[in-house]
Length: 437
Length: 54
Image (cartoon, rainbow over all chains, first blue to last red):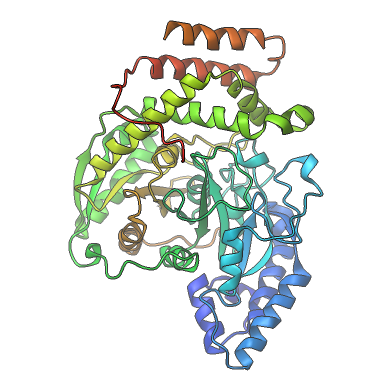
């Protein structure tokens, strides 16, 4: 049997292939995951709960199926973390919200059910900022304990970075998948709006909420997409010719100096490897897009929490409480004006994306900030607003040893094409080592 | 448009006795900034329809 540390370095795709080929058992993988969680989660705080017993039972089920000669799914035996706003039958969905302490669903969220059908094994629920918003949870960034791991999918990012699991589910309304992925040195992927159903997931703002995934490679993100019912589009043209990247100049200008310089250097490496770079401008300013996003999110969050807030106002963390309270004063006419502007933003971004394979910009305005905040969401929120698929790719470390990341995005339903571009970029830029020895 | 702006400002002012912490003040200020930006943009009557079905 391989050591827990060796098994932890496997990506989801590689580990699943090894299970199918009989080189490792699902039980070994799951027990290695549980061993690593037990050994280090006191330090990182990535997990809201761990379900050791059922995880091992499910792993044995996969191993028995293999022994019987049955065909195994794409995620056979893969330990999976699930953000604690996503329902898993039999485990509480607490969402960092005390009144939900005993809210235990009897059915899996649609995305969890889809991954379980492919053989994935839920080892537990990962910590979220309360109700998937922005109040920092106690989770620690393994690259630097004084820095934020991002949010709101903080636990999912750290669980993957710390090699507890090769993949974890996340959600994104502003930047809650891509930002924690960036700050923890992982790959984050948010598919097109609506492509992965939100059934069984606590909403924050319906027209912005997405399911996302955090993993170590783009290949694993593609496997995720296939496993939830989105077939690959075939050989993408991006793999056969020079990749065209549209650099979003407004975002480059708005990023912190250190981030801008690092992303510019990464883009030069991509250019030397054959990418064609063009500057892209969008008529609508980033400030207006941010204003639309905020107005829609505040309005919808106030509606989503109308009765819950009335019953439990004292249980809301400060940022979440402010979001709901302020959202309640927005008139319907202003909300709908913002929704119309959201449609205009989507059209303008689609026009900008038309002539390139992917738009590119820094994932976040800054490197991981101190833990008082989960960081700024507005670079990631552009694509929550437009509903475009987006990916965060890690590339090297800053002078202080913090992960750098860039963001790629493509127009609606070009998920598979985007992943092809991201895979190529990831090969050129290289991955990151584990932040934990 | 001015009426809409006043409606939001009045709404925030009327809840001001409840607005106690810094996060709520910040959130209110962000909304007012967003409001000014959004109301400065005029959409053509037929330009876009709000996608009410998501």
